[in-house]
Length: 87
Image (cartoon, rainbow, N blue to C red; front, side, top):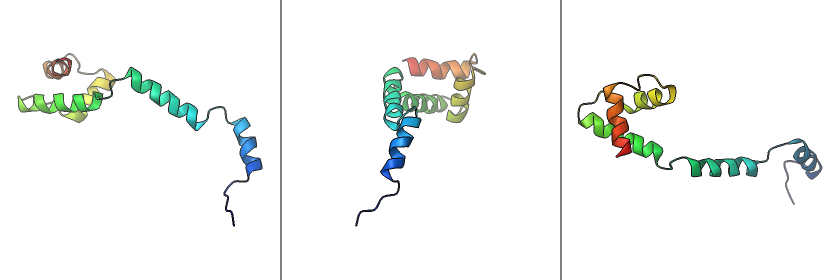
């Protein structure tokens, strides 16, 4: 006995209507990984914790928020973390 959740006649019709397939989404993600640093988050995390050892008061959550919004990016604490990431 063969089980199926969707009848194949409906599936073909839906494929014609759906403009983007899952494979296309996957390919977009792969191309974005090439553009971004694959270790970006880990590098940010290591830089933040290293700077905290040196007495910096910015935690990882604050650093990520500041980076994404552009707020407080001129402070000395933020620049120290950016310098560690660049090194």
